[in-house]
Length: 74
Image 1 (cartoon, rainbow, N blue to C red):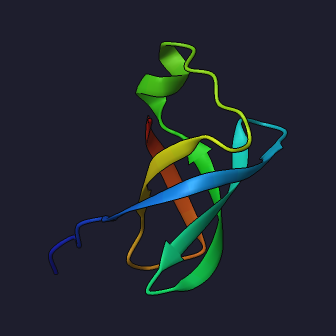
Image 2 (cartoon, rainbow, N blue to C red; image 1 turned 90 degrees about the horizontal axis):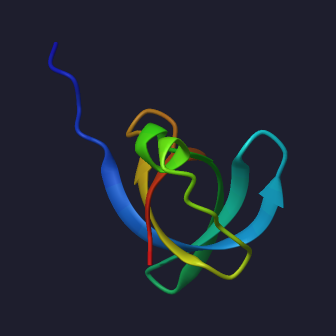
């Protein structure tokens, strides 16, 4: 069975949580969804700082749409 590709979406950071995790709001089809996202390894390695209100790109797993990984900060 082949591995499925992650789903790429854009969102806004709502809240910063401990352990470099964030609550991120996504607007998909006029509806708002909230996910728990962690920072990707390259962003953590280069000390990219993020605050509530920042726009970010996320990768969501096709298996669990409530968790994601932040890959880019705009």
